[in-house]
Length: 417
Image (cartoon, rainbow, N blue to C red; front, top):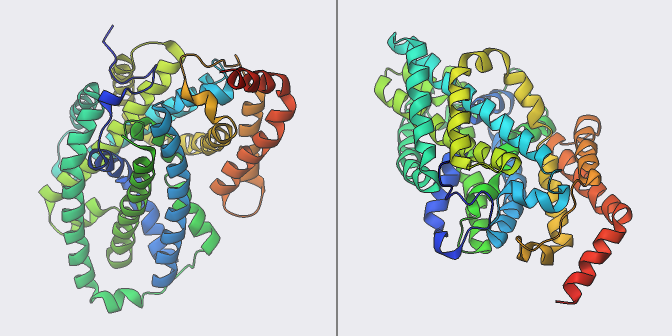
């Protein structure tokens, strides 16, 4: 079995902690994703200039607060999302969040591989199957080297995407007649502002639920909060702006498509490849941590297996599974709500993971997730916010009532220490 230095079964020790710059690059690499540009394109053609930036600002602020809370908990405890879930869901109960989180990340990895191979194949005439195989293998190999490789890759990719993408957007805006012309573009089919806000938050709240997997390496909890806020404000906002500018001026939301249309073939391949590579590697890394919680195996080994599965099924996932992945992703934000509430109510328990007493399965946490999904689906308002709050509030009310004896025993145990 491959040695696991990803600390998938324990707290990250002080010697393995990293600085703010390294983790900021990793988190920016996570948020730099083509799907976010597609959302930005929909916002750019459905909102006027003022409402677009207002939706992006408010949405990313709410998203940043949510991920910052999870980042704080991750850095404070040094634990993955899945080990944190053991406290609230129980040891075996945490297998459900791990299966949902890990499974969706493998699915998105496969979709991402196809998202790179298909447009590059069309633009160059290269065989799509060979492109899928090559890109899938390269992305999987990178994950083998863990958080250090993600840091190096992101340090290269983030500036490259930002600079090349910004240059392409500048060309597109000039082609449209300058910023004054862009500001006066009015949507042909206006988008409701609440729907737009839900799109901004929903675009990355599922991946944001995994924030602890990355910022648990932070040297301080305050630093982790800052990293999460910067990543989602800067990274997500930049992707939305790229998508909106491309859609408004050239009718294309993906900056890589814009660059292909502008004749910038090599920069387009570089931007598209790095864009998907960074997010895909984060997804594969997180999937290994999730399945390690279920199986007890090395997360490195599991990431390699997941990479092979995602690569081999990339075209099938791309053609058949995106809708299902979107549906599964709706069940993920409530998990974060439950974790946050349990940590706030029982912080002392989280200080000593190895000695902590945990339930086998906490059905209240699972019920709270179901309530959160229902709240997101049925209640009026912003879907992902309703889902998180629905799960958080129901868990905060039901858990003390249902598990009173267990909670009392834990409090007495800590009082005696």
